[in-house]
Amino acid sequence: MSDYLAVEDPPFDPWPVGSTGSVGSVGSDPGVLNRVREWLGRFILTVDDADLDLLTLWAAHTHLCDVLYTTPRLVLDSPVPGAGKTTTCEHLQRLCRRPLQAASLSSPAMLARLLDKELRTILIDEVDRNLDPKRPGVEDLIAIINAGYKRGATRPVLVPGPKGDWDVKEMPTFSPVVLAGNAPNLPEDTRSRTIRVLLLPDLEGRVETSDWEEIEADAMDLGEALSQWADETRETVRATRPELPPGCVGRTKERWNPLRRVAEAAGGHWPDVADDLIRRDLIAAQMDREDGMVTSPPAVTLLRDIAELWPEATAFVPTAALVADLVMRHPRMWGPESAYGKALTAQRMGRMLAQGFKVHSGRQGDGPRGYYRQALSPVWRRMGITPPDEPTELTKPAEPTAGGAW
Image (tube, rainbow, N blue to C red; front, side):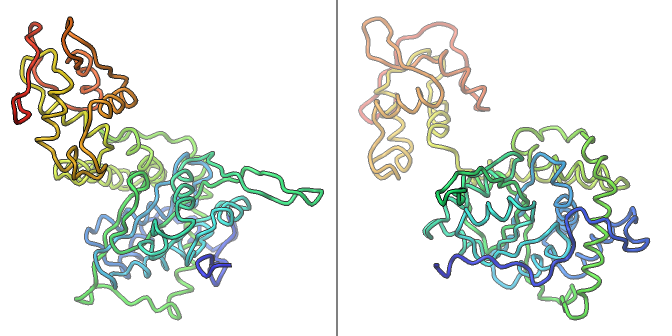
């Protein structure tokens, strides 16, 4: 077995799933989330203090995943080592539901077998190394991490049959996951399922050292109190459907709805805290788009670039004119030096538009093939792309100049 295939259980078994064991009056403390937030603030330094609220809600939601539909992946990020990512994982290990400290995971089948027995919280440290796309088996592991954020996801696994043969069993992959690393280069489809907490080194001594010999018992008590609080609020969370801030839809809603439902059940100031976190995330996503930090699929980029260069008040543009102008204006994307390795052709552009958006080329009379604005306009709008002004009438087809521009 490769030394890369190693799954480490925690050196302790903090609490059984759904534990209802007595922990005194602390177990029914309605302010347990406040206490968790205070605890994390003693030992963890985040760039934004609101991220301590995020960590608190995320830890609480792991105990309630059995009544939630999705579980956002938590990314603990830092541009440099020594920022407290491992320390944060250690605290989450004491606070979350049935933690599994995975030093390195390369076997999707092993992970599926673990989750088939019970729902657990997976903590993966050093993801910039352990989830390196170049490492064998990582693609399948990332596929499980992606699919397992939504209830009902499964993975087929071979298991011994009754006659010494092999049977296929669908095993669940749904589980909360922590991904900690130094600016991890996660795939876009994985990143869209994550909520990020940014950590920086504590150079000024603002937080306490996590001396586990001294604080272990208190951390365990707090984790058990959080587990019991979850038991007491489980039915409330199951039935709660709070209203989310405007713009929190689609994948964003899937990420934040679980934490918002937990906040609603906690009451007090927690619903407002969760709404503020959601609005902050929406603003950050908009700023990332404006700064060009969000990578779009090639077909979406093509659609956007065509809208950008479409000549004003023109209803039809020949394919050759579109291709020539795309190559001239965006050579790194559509020219010979692009990642594709070849310049854009009419055939390739036609396939991308037809397969991606069911937009096909046409003709004006006996002229060359090209694209009608009226075919592109609905797709532009549905993709959130601002199209050029609507032409008032069909105009003469645009012709490219020697340089490719109209």
